[in-house]
Image (tube, rainbow, N blue to C red; front, side, top):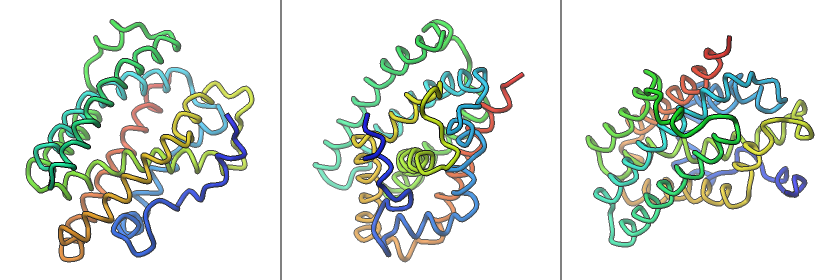
Length: 237
């Protein structure tokens, strides 16, 4: 992979100037920075993250994906148009396929499928995934998409922050493949599309009038993402 191309992107370039996504990210402040540049992320960047931390994260991330697919399925129900419903249905199928790839990736780290699927969800995984589903059940498509966007767009920003990090070590970094997965142009385009969707829904679904509520949800998602990283660090001996 050509990392020179990957480093060209501004980590904060997702969304449009004055659009709802950037306004939500800016309003989240320390919650957003604490998520996208968490100590777990910084240790991925320099390769110093304990293996036990990464393995714990991989297992819980697999369990998270299952509920992420459910939330995307809820977005089909909440979709504002037939095209939106089609797009979300395709996203559900893509995530379900991703669970298979995730299991193969786990195997590369010495985690057999029965090991991954036999581990219960942690409190951090439960609290995050059920909160997202609750926001979607309670609100409309904008509420749900705002709850989902910090995951999709945030991982894109995390990858760009890592590539811009002076301490980043790619050669010999055991986590290089993870970094490159989210720095890949395909993932970056998906993250940008997610930010653009928030901007568009902000216009069509009264984002300005609801900004305080949406900002509170966005910041809470960022805090829940922080807790998701932190559980990995806490798992190290």
